[in-house]
Image 1 (tube, rainbow, N blue to C red):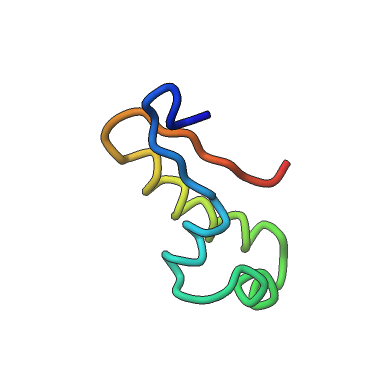
Image 2 (cartoon, rainbow, N blue to C red):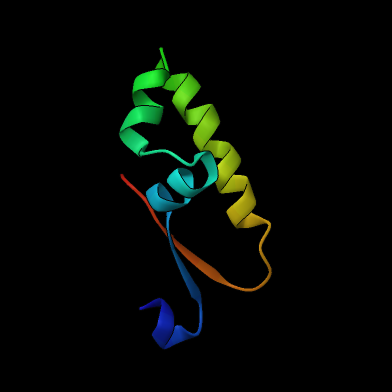
Length: 61
């Protein structure tokens, strides 16, 4: 869909893994509370939102 409308597509989980250079499961396991994981994930999300142009971000519900 993103390609059809000229947007850049990002998989949010993959972007988190890329930012922290480790599997998402490990990042979640290292986070004692869900809020800690969400705080870590928000760093990667902020980087996505700072990109130029239009983007589509796929994430978990």
